[in-house]
Amino acid sequence: MEDLKKLIREVPDFPKPGILFYDITTLLKDPIGLHRAVDALANHYVGRKIDRVVGIEARGFIFAPMVAYRLNAGFVPVRKPNKLPAKTASASYDLEYGKDALEIHQDAVSTGQEVLIIDDLLATGGTAAAVAKLVKSLGGHVAGLGFLIELEFLKGREKLSEYQIHSVLKY
Amino acid sequence: MEDLKKLIREVPDFPKPGILFYDITTLLKDPIGLHRAVDALANHYVGRKIDRVVGIEARGFIFAPMVAYRLNAGFVPVRKPNKLPAKTASASYDLEYGKDALEIHQDAVSTGQEVLIIDDLLATGGTAAAVAKLVKSLGGHVAGLGFLIELEFLKGREKLSEYQIHSVLKY
Image (cartoon, rainbow over all chains, first blue to last red; front, top):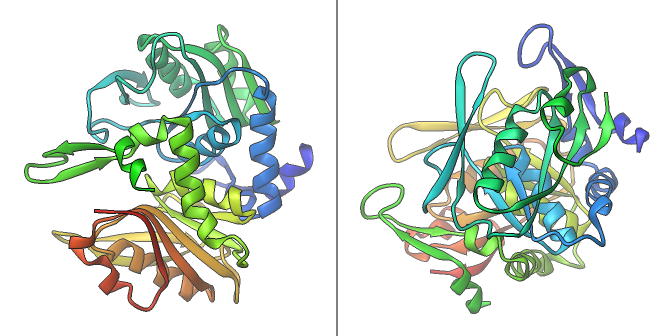
């Protein structure tokens, strides 16, 4: 999988000075790169019962639905506040400065369902931990968390130590 | 395809009074509904050369990548300003009050490529027209525009009369 890294563009000082941004748009536009990335994420779970795949607005909406399609599961969006039209459950999480919140439809996951959380990037793990909490609050079981890229130096795994984590590319 | 409508939740007065919102999350969470919706969008283009599938932030990121995966094409995101990290092209479009802008990476589409634009909803067509303009500004050919839902009474097709349009469900 390491050669997938060649398709990821490294952009220095984005979105602010000192940050090295891993731009996956160069991988996504490549038909073979896209297919290999989705399959590397999804194949890890083939043969297991996965009922729902959850993705987080906005970039997380890219991979999670493709993984759901590949695994014959349903897709569930987690969105910023006031975007989902029916009754929601909400969880807040810490940002560098202040807090933000995420919402999920209350009827998106049923008790006992196996739920996979997929995102493009595991950084500090704060968002993923909030999403896992939302899934559990609806009675779902977190079957695992899958990421295309894991930034190991940010130690996101420590915040998610109770879950199974699968990442395709590590930096 | 009309029975897919049964999986779409109608929410009155969202996001504001007098608007009937077609909530596709109830379709997305259904594994069979998700698969049938993606295939109904994608199968229309099977056998044609499609190089890139473009999706628009945020809800447009859900279907466009799945269609790209299904058609063995690449996926290209169109985003709100200042989200894409490399050099972009920009197009503005009219909102009910004021204007907004969308961006695409300049290197996302090459001259002569066949580009499909996929979104969940065709309403007034303003966003789709702006995205088609962006694709053409990069030298791409708009192979078609595909929508899960078309709100016919808003006459979006009139604004997109120069393009081939395919919609799965009409209201």
